[in-house]
Image 1 (cartoon, rainbow, N blue to C red):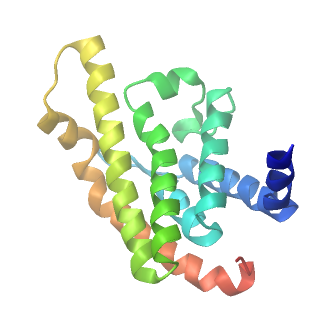
Image 2 (spheres, one colour; image 1 turned 45 degrees about the horizontal axis):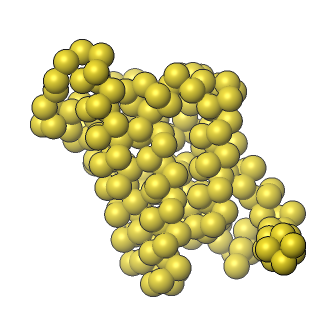
Length: 187
């Protein structure tokens, strides 16, 4: 009973609004696709923005809501895809990895504060964790369906082409979040 009272005190209506807004923002940005040889979405930009603008707790919750919405069939993933099959597919680990990215961000910022260098460190480490989890997931699922694949091959397909664009998105998200922080007035 005491735990329920504490939970009620910690979650306010404004928190729920920011969590919902964050999940919607990630969904909308996942639909924005830049067509190239390897298509790029603005999904990671939204994840970075939600974490830096709304904080680790709300941001991670928004990411989890986004993943759950997609898992139950709402077309929030890139290309208006949805369903548990997407999450269990070869690239689903990168989507699930966003939750780990949020948790890493939350943890690092909790211990080091909300200084710019701590946020950058948290996002870079979180992105590395997301890449690692997604790559391991991809290797397992892809190997089961198509036979063994090397780590170098998977990194060439799924990570290396995205590093520079993701770092650019990280910088843009941090800049935008810093500009909007006076308007958002979050603690």
